[in-house]
Image (tube, rainbow, N blue to C red; front, side):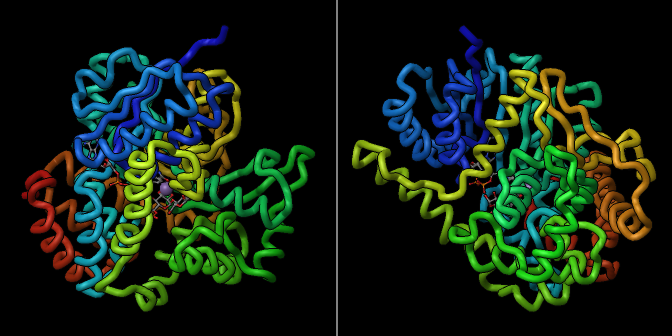
Length: 441
Ligand SMILES: NC(=O)c1ccc[n+]([C@@H]2O[C@H](COP(=O)([O-])OP(=O)(O)OC[C@H]3O[C@@H](n4cnc5c(N)ncnc54)[C@H](O)[C@@H]3O)[C@@H](O)[C@H]2O)c1
Ligand SMILES: O=P(O)(O)OC[C@H]1O[C@H](O[C@H]2[C@H](O)[C@@H](O)[C@@H](O)O[C@@H]2CO)[C@H](O)[C@@H](O)[C@@H]1O
Ligand SMILES: [Mn+2]
């Protein structure tokens, strides 16, 4: 009988947790669990999802030892995998990350803009504490981290835990793009062997091989140029995400070499994106009124009704599926290909060795074996180096408590650029984040 695994979901009260729970139920044959613990610092929020989980497992996974807790000491004993998706400061702070810069004429953007800077400065401390808590009781556990801004979190964890080879940072956007390509090409996503390089939310697909070794990228670029681009799950997306995907066709027209990550739209067309944003109703408001409300209402209703049957909590399960597939590939040494965030060390030959780059890798029991891409052309190198410098200065600002480095970081962010604007944005963000950030001197 094959081994059964023990996992902890950190951020048990996350809007993404029900989709992940469903993915775990769906894959109980291929990735059997003996124990699942949900851990969160917000008891009330987690209880809603936790009670839903209890009912779901009674119905679909009766032998599973399930519990939820706010006690870190209890959560991390005897764990094989930690799935981590926390949001320090919650949506209340995401709203500020987006609105404060916008009130000063700058796009906030919760991961790659100055909003991501603010969010990163909040996430680093909690993520370090989490790793220390896990390592105290489960030194061998795999920590699979999705917490954003993943680029900044990954760099901070590399710096703090240089010898810990069982922390893996990963984003679901590449797999969402691959699923969307599969739909356009009428292929199965599992047929693809992608080549990708960049930083998190800042990268490009350079090739998309099928199992016969044929590169499908030229055909895909032609289709997108002619027909435009939609996410695989377009029917479930908010209008802002549809617009985001549509901009891929513009990026392809201007920069036809490779297929870009959707997040590059913010860096390449900031004027256009700014014109589409409402300073009084940002993505945080859209999510609070949409996904968050829907997920929590559905969980409460299911518990009241005494059954989860028919509770379509999340429509898109790409995120949950990916998390479980990653764990499975590690657990069973499957060596499947995923796009992951790893230390460069020559993978992108003409970039800093210590940068946390995003590339394709096979994943097995000893972790990722990434594929190098050689030298990248000047345009992409220039874009990446500026973003890398911004991200590196952000973590240095956090570890050193340095206002000077924080100002340098924001000045280098392509959404800010002007140093006087950077200072205004920084000062306003410091004020809003005084309960979360280290003091910057
Ligand atoms: N990497 C990716 O591609 C990807 C994709 C989707 C979501 N995410 C990330 O997943 C996280 C969750 O997103 P969400 O929109 O569901 O947010 P959410 O606010 O709904 O959920 C986050 C949960 O984390 C909890 N939390 C906060 N600080 C914590 C801590 N120190 N320890 C334990 N729990 C803590 C909160 O109480 C909350 O219940 C975010 O960081 C988001 O950016 C990443
Ligand atoms: O604005 P949000 O909270 O809806 O999304 C922010 C996240 O966006 C990306 O995730 C996509 C994900 O790729 C897709 O599977 C689907 O589930 O939608 C998500 C967005 O709704 C991004 O990769 C994440 O890092 C962001 O957290
Ligand atoms: Mn992501």
